[in-house]
Length: 246
Image 1: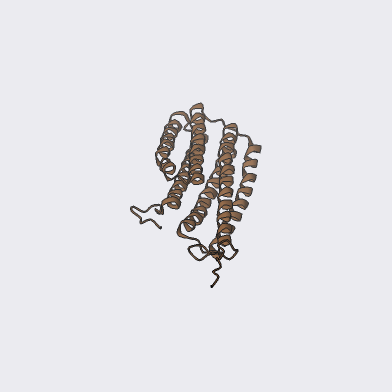
Image 2: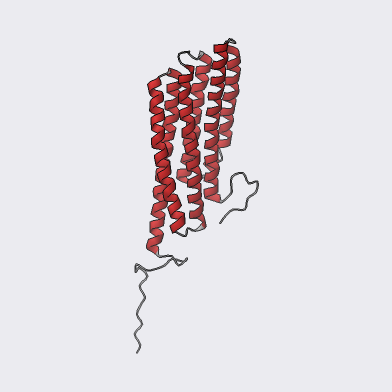
């Protein structure tokens, strides 16, 4: 009588359905999870810099401006570290379609966060250009609200990324309308409250640029949401009716 021996299914070399060793697959998933964690950490730092740059601008605290600028260097270092690891995953692994979307989305979200961080330093530096003049109360109030709105949109975008919630990301364009309305109000406030002499005109230009920078911060949050949608559904940002990448 021939003895039949069972083939173990838990040996180190066991492969999944796609022929990839289970251990290698688990390691890849752990690497993606670490990347996502670091992206969330990076976004938290950038989110804090939105508030810090707004405070520096409103208080004309030049030491706070220097701190925001210094923190941006740390943001850049972390950004490049995450990006290098993402490239390594693409080069050394063979991700499935869903994992490939996640890595690609991470790389694009890093780009949006880097641009957002750059905008926050530019906003903070606005304190130097406006110093020692004080902002009119109405303008101050609007800038404070624009800073808060930018933080809200970035936090929502990263929550959507962390949870893989495309429905959450889809709310960002509507929130962006709020920021657009704030910018319109800021322009009206500039015309109504800023003097028309040379110093007043220079101040008006700087305030208008700062309003534009906040609008761009919100736009980058919307774009992060679009990349979250791509990560979850395969729908490419900007595509009218893109076929999902399954």
